[in-house]
Each structure stands twice: as structure tokens, then as C-alpha cells.
Length: 353
Image 1 (cartoon, rainbow, N blue to C red):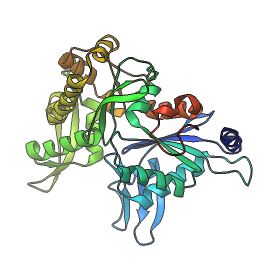
Image 2 (cartoon, one colour):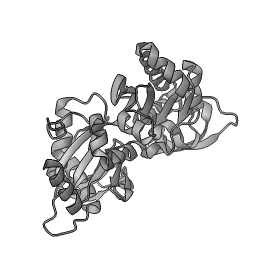
Image 3 (tube, one colour):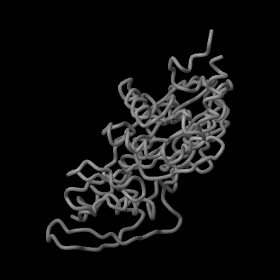
Image 4 (cartoon, rainbow, N blue to C red):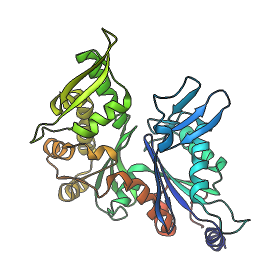
């Protein structure tokens, strides 16, 4: 009876999956695929409390607004830092994509990807924000599990699957077998931390003050984790901290790699620690299948080469790594009965006795 009711409600309203990321949020709609891929940024008028823009439009305002307008990220290191703003961002996404077939149609069921090891308080914050934003039911899935499913790894079989998901706020290592996480490591070192490293390096080495967007552009354009075959250079513009005047210098990929070196070493160190804790049988599977990289951080040049060299395990980047988590959450949404064991336990998800 309960399953029949759910089918009827799903027919009346469209279900959606959301990768609620620190840097970017993606939305998958049942039977339609990924329909939104926008930065997790909200612009707010502090005088009135009004939300002026969300997503790409809001990101364009970062560092360019008058004092009373702030462009903020409501998620920091993968968790909600501003509940009300997150709720408004979720409401914006849900209203934009969940077309109701009838006036009385119920809100959608929503699956949301969250960092591995999120606390009960953090899980409740995500669930409550989605319910307040109009969701009918909210299910949570850990991002590395969703990424592994999105990469079409056989997570429900008795075999080791090694995934490293590097987002904006967190990097997560997970060894998955039989629909569960056997070993996991979660680090608050990811894309944002690498940007921060570049900003600090520019200040220390060149006495140059640069913004977050400039640092990110440098990372994307010439950043790498392993020496490149061809040298890359790019101009770096900022304010000289000594003279107070604008200055432009040329920097190479070697300089940017040096700036990010410490954080990248920490990520590799956590991968090695996870390998050390992996049961021998699963490790044998992983040595055959390899390590899979997902998330925006997987696109950092040479990261797969560095990990393979350091761990002696073949390493590859999953197809379309930026969308792996939301694709995986969407696949769970489309096959909820078969894949419900991969969701975080909730009273609504427990199978009937």
C-alpha cells in the first residue's frame, strides 16, 4: 500500500536529486536528467534581507558589490553555514525544475548528496532546509557513494571499489563494497583550499594581493599536481602590498604547483592511509580495477598521474567528473527500490517488515 501511494505521488510531482556542493550545485530531474549546474552563491541585500540573485548571476557579483549587497556561499566545507540562505537557494532550485502536473500536486521527493561523515546536526540541517523549501520527502546519500554509482561502479557486489571525490570544500576517499562504505576518509582540503594556497603564496612570495576568482582562474589555466611536458605561463594581476599600486607579473605552472604542493601531499597521504586500512581481499580488487577520481578537483592536471605514482595503483578520472555525484543520486532516484540500501538510514527508507 505504501509503495502504491509513493508511485501515485511520484506521478503527480517530479522527483529530483541535488548535489549541494560548496562551489557548485547540480540538479537532476527524474526522466529529464541534469537541468541545473550553477555556482552555490547567493547575492543578498543586507538592508532589506532580499535575495537579489542566485547561481551564475550571483557569482558575477563576488567582489564587485556595494557594501550593503553581499554575495555569499551558504555552504562552507560541504556543510550548511547559513540555514536561511541555503533554504532560499534550495527553494529556487526546486521551484525552477519541479513542474507540478496539477494545482494540488505534492512537492517532489528529493535526494541530496552530503559529505561523508557529516554529523547528525549537519544532516538534520540539510533535511530541514529541503523540507522548508517545499520537498515532500528528503533522502540523503553520501557523496562518494553517489559518485561511485554515477561512475557506474558495481557498488552492490562483493568487490572493492576505490573512489576519491574532490569538490570545492571537501575531498573524500571511500572504499565501497556490498552497497556500503568499508573505509573512508574525509578532508576539508579541496578546491577552495587550493585557491587559498595560491592567494597566500602570492602574498608571501610576491607581496601581491589577489582575489579568490583570480586564484581559481590561475589554478584552472596553469595549475597542476605533477610536472607538465610543456611549460605554461599566465599573467597575475593584483595590488602590491608594499606600494599599494596595481602590479602585473608572469607566473609559471611550476610556481602554482609549488603553491598547492602541501595540500596535494595531504590528499595523497589520506589516500595512502585508506589503502593501509583496506582488507587484503578488497585491496586485491582495487589493484585490478584502480582508483577512480571524481569531482571538479579530479580535473587538476596530473593529479591522476601523481596518485598512480605514489600508490602504485592505476588511477583514472571518471567520465564527466563534475556531474558524477548528481548522476549517481539521480540513478538512485530512478531505482529507489533496488538501491535504497545505499542511502543514509532514515525511518522513511527502512523496508517494510
